[in-house]
Length: 263
Image (cartoon, rainbow, N blue to C red; front, side, top):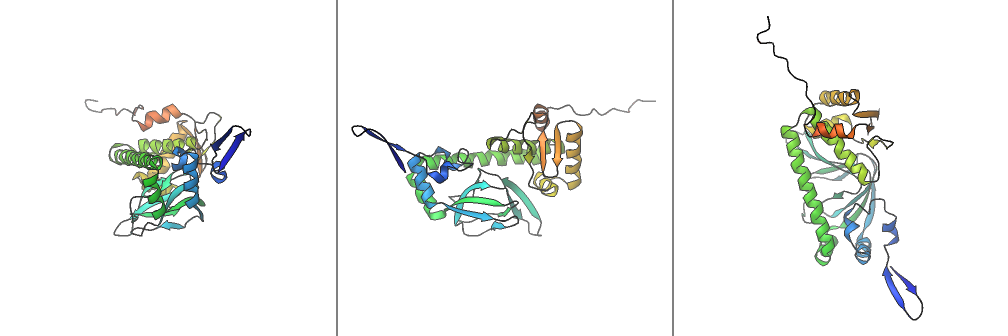
């Protein structure tokens, strides 16, 4: 799409963002944000929009990767199944996140819609071709892949070293970061609530905790004034700095009184 401005003697062509993309709520944070208008038009030309109802399986493990793309609306649960049938949640995808890998021809896990989900999808062969032809797209995808790697490292740290409260605080800060990227002020100062589309059991599975432990930690964070629980599916962060201190292990911990030598 091009706009022509100026008079008959001097005409300048200005590339315009495709209309569908200009109205996209996540364009500024999605893979396409790094593209020029002509590049965006090329990407849009291969895009397909698909809707999924809650509980729908978007893809299963060890399938041929036929589509990749951007989450426009909704939340997706990514998980793997253990040999005994147990489920291990390995991540959640939110609006603006990229689903699938344009470099892997086979899926390595399951993806399920937690809410109603809208995806902007690109056929696998077509996106691979555009990656080779559009350096901006390749660099943006590499950046997103590196961010996923950093998140995976943080998750390993979370599971291996952090306490239950630190894990939950870290998770809530991740949700706040995702909300802020979508323009939601989630710091509790006149801001909006953070959606929790996953249930407590799914949060527990992701954090490597029991359901009872997660419920207790929510109650503790609420009692200490760090969060306000609006209802089971939403919270508001009331003390952002305090929550960061907890997540980073800098908050004061109760001291253990020694009873040695006490008569």
